[in-house]
Image (cartoon, rainbow, N blue to C red; front, top):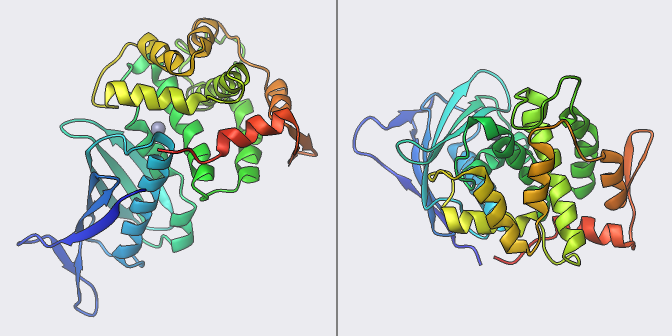
Length: 307
Ligand SMILES: [Zn+2]
């Protein structure tokens, strides 16, 4: 069971702002999720939504990540939220120095439904679960955050599975090697970093499920990496990430996949992956098979896990 609570903090000076009616709006809050303390610092410039909605968004996003990893990645983190004109959650960045944290930029007209459908904060929180592996391997950090965000949201009931697979079918071709590609470690384009990394993760997830009789997945590997490393505050060689993950699943999928994709433009066939997941595509729209071994693997990937 998750322990969830939040409490407003009322610093003694200068840390509150006023709205037009003169009510004082607290802007610093501690959100406690599964024992982790998230200190939220909200830009005093006014949002149209009440600050409680921001807190609810932080809490929901943290719960989604806790559901995936079995715990929040770090014991405490600072969330600095600044506001700009307009709608939506605009930008996020995870950092570790001096303490783990996330910077976020939110539109002052952001709506409740935009916060509910937001992927940015879950993506950034996911970054906190991987040790630093170095700039050359940014594809792993970004690929994992891109891949895990959607899976974790489906597991938590925050995103419909069909929508997830539809988005993956549409976006993953952006991760395929283009002419001149030299492998994931040497091709630092946007497409290869975010979606090439995500394709690596999806292919590894499917292969782990297939080789383990559908009992293990990438999620088990990532939980083990977080458990051994403590997440983004530590620095690991990328090989250690894959060796630790493989040990947790009783396979060699991650080490083998890395060897195959790091220095050469090789990539898994997306058509084959959709096939192995029981995903059919008609006129660009995904249809999900049911009752087949492939559907069982697809369902297991997005099924909620025990802590
Ligand atoms: Zn990222």
